[in-house]
Image 1 (cartoon, rainbow, N blue to C red):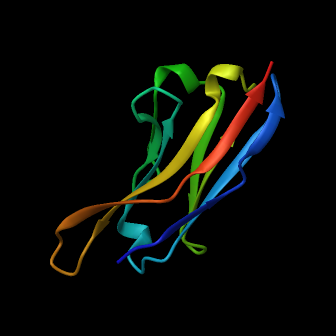
Image 2 (image 1 turned 90 degrees about the horizontal axis):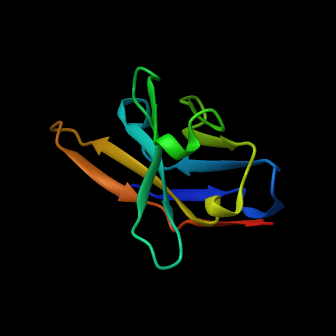
Image 3 (image 1 turned 30 degrees about the horizontal axis):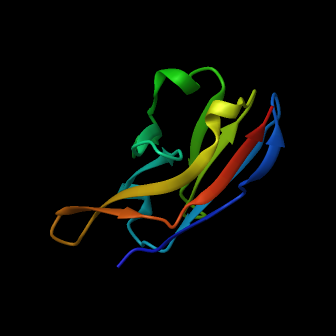
Length: 120
């Protein structure tokens, strides 16, 4: 079982910045695809960004140029640097991990989420 613990959320004004962190308990972290999703009130969960095992990254269009995802394999931690925040970025941000087991089978894991609120 993999545990993901997010931190770094909070209340920020429009134009401000926050950095989210997600610490993973998995010993297979370096072989895991990591990502961040967002759940806004009344909306479906949506992908924000992912970082692969080779550190290549993908972003959804609404955060490109503003958010940066990165990983530190030595610390089993993935980060999401969020700049130029706008009220539409408000939501619960959830850490995601796609982790291989010893057979190579991949499973998805989710953190509990951290609240980000951007005031206008």
